[in-house]
Image 1 (cartoon, protein in one colour):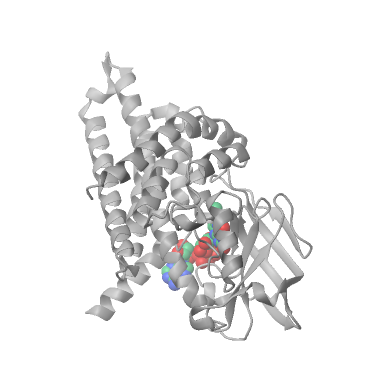
Image 2 (cartoon, rainbow, N blue to C red; image 1 turned 45 degrees about the vertical axis):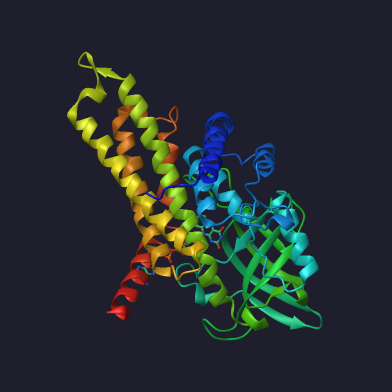
Length: 383
Ligand SMILES: Cc1cc2nc3c(=O)[nH]c(=O)nc-3n(C[C@H](O)[C@H](O)[C@H](O)COP(=O)(O)OP(=O)(O)OC[C@H]3O[C@@H](n4cnc5c(N)ncnc54)[C@H](O)[C@@H]3O)c2cc1C
C-alpha cells in the first residue's frame, strides 16, 4: 500500500471523522426513503473543500491531486456512495471552457460547492457504445439547437449545469461535441423535460431520462477540444473517463470497506452456539479474505492515481483498478451480508445499501466487460 504523507493522512482522517459523525447518520436516514442528498450535507462538504480538491488554490480549491481526491472519495463512499459521487460533479468538470474569465468563475463556484453539474452522455440506444450518440446539435446563427433523448442523467434537475454530449456532424467517434447547458437548481430549463428512473440503489442522486427538444445553447457554450478543434468530444470523453474510472475504483473500495467494517463489528457482537460468531473459522476466514481483497483493490487505485498525478500514461491502470475494485466490491459486500445472516437482508442494517451501491460500480463508467475489452486490447497491442 502507498505510504501517505502526513498531510494526506490528515485529509483522510478528517474525511473519516466527517463520514462517521455527519454523513452516515444522514445516509442511514435518507437512503431507505430514496431521497436525494440534502443541500445541508452538500454545504458541509463544500466547507470541507471536497468540491475543489483538484481545483487550484487561486480559484479557492485545495490545489491537490488525484491521490487526495480518491482518498476522500473512499472515505465518503464508506458512508454513502452517492455522497462520494457528488464531488465528481465539480472538481474541475467543465473547466474546458475557452473563455478564461468564464472558466475562472466556474472553477471558483465549483470550489465553493456553488456549481454542481450533471453529465448527459448516455442515451436509450447509446450506453457502452458511446460513439453511437444520436442527440443532434445544429448550428443556427450564434447558437446550437439540440434535439434528442438522454438516459441516466444523474442530479439533472438539481444541477447548476448539464454537460450534454451531442452530434454536430455525421459519423461515429468524429462529429461529437460537449455543450454546457447552464440552468437553475431544482428545475429543468425550457427545452428539457425529465422523468426519474426507478432504481434499486444509488439513492441520493436521482437519475433522469431527458427529452431534449429545440434546446437553444449559445455557440460559446460548446466546449472545444484540444487546440480549439470541434467534433473531438469522443477523445475528450476518453480522457475524462480515466478520472471517472479512478473515482469509481475509490468509490467501490469505500463501499466494500463499509460492508467489511460493519460485518467485523457484527461478528464480534453476534453470539450463536454460546460464542461470538467471530470465533468460528468460517467467519474469520471470510473476513480475512474480504480485508485482503479490499487492501489489494486500494493498492491498485492508489498506484494508478500516483501515475495520474505524475503525468504518466495510466489508461490501462485506470481500467485495471476500476475492474478489480468493482468486482471486489460486489463480492465483499455480498460476503458481508452473509456474515450478518438474516439481519444482512433487512434494511435495518447498512450492509445492503453498500451491496446495492457496489453492484452499480460494475455497470457505470464503463462496464466490467468494457474494462476487460480495453485491458485485453492494450495487452495484445503491446505484445
Ligand atoms: C444508476 C446509474 C447511473 C448512471 N449515471 C449516468 C450519468 O449520470 N450520466 C450518463 O451519461 N450515464 C450514466 N449512466 C449510464 C452508464 O454509463 C451506462 O449504463 C453504462 O455505460 C452501460 O451502458 P448500458 O446501460 O446502455 O448497457 P449496454 O451498453 O447496453 O450493455 C449491456 C450489456 O452488454 C455488455 N456489452 C456491451 N458492449 C459489449 C462489448 N463490446 N463486449 C462485451 N460486452 C458488451 C455490457 O457489458 C453489459 O453487460 C448511469 C447508469 C446507471 C445504471
